[in-house]
Length: 292
Image (cartoon, rainbow, N blue to C red):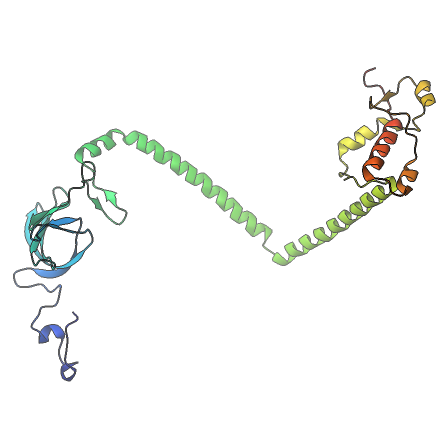
C-alpha cells in the first residue's frame, strides 16, 4: 500500500512484506482486520485540546473487530487514530437502533432538536422512529390512494407517448415520399400566395391607396351581396325608398373622381384616403333596409 521497494528488490517482494506490515483488509488470527472507515457523522475529538471537530465523511484506516451479536446480527467495532493529536476513537454499530455509537475518545456532534436522525442508503432515506412508523401505518390508506392516482397518471402518459411514437413512425415511414409531398404543397401554395399578392397590389394601384387590404373571408362575401353601388346622386336616393345609407357622416359635396385624385401632383396620402372614403360612402347603399 504505497510502501517503498528498492530497485534491486523490485519484482521479488512486496512493500508490506519488506516492511513487515500486514496488507489492509487481511484477516488476523484474532479476527481483526484493517479497513478504510468513513465517519458517518461529525465527531468531537476529546483528546485534542481544545476539542476539535472531525467532519462527516473523513476517512481513516481503522481496525475492524467483531465484538458480539444482536440476535443474529454481528456488532462491529472500529478503532481509529486521529492523526492531528494521536488520540484513539472507538465507534461501534448498534443494530437495535440501526446507527453508529461513539464508545471512546469522542462524542457525536449534537445538531439540535429535530436533526438528530441519521440517514442511510445512497438516496439519504431517513431512519424512522417508532412513532413515525406507527403514524405511517395509520395513514396507509391515504398513501395507497396517492399511489393509485400516480399509477393512473403514469399509464395515461405512457399511452399518449406510445401514440405519438406510432404517429411519427407512420408519417415518416418513407422520408422521401413525405419530403416530396411537402415540396409539392409548398410549390402549390407559393403560387397561390403570389397570385393573391399580385391581385392585392393591382387593386391598390387601381383605387389609388396604400392602405393594407386584408384577405377575403366568407362574411365579406355575404355582406357584399347586400350592398348596391351607384353614383351617389340625390335623385337615386329619392327613387328608391328601401335604400339606407351605411354612414350618417356622408358628405355630398365630394364628387371628385378617384382617378383625378390619384393623378393630382403633390396630393397627400391622408387627403386621398379621406376623399376615397367619402366617395365610396356616397356611392354605397344597402340593398335592403335592415330596419324595415
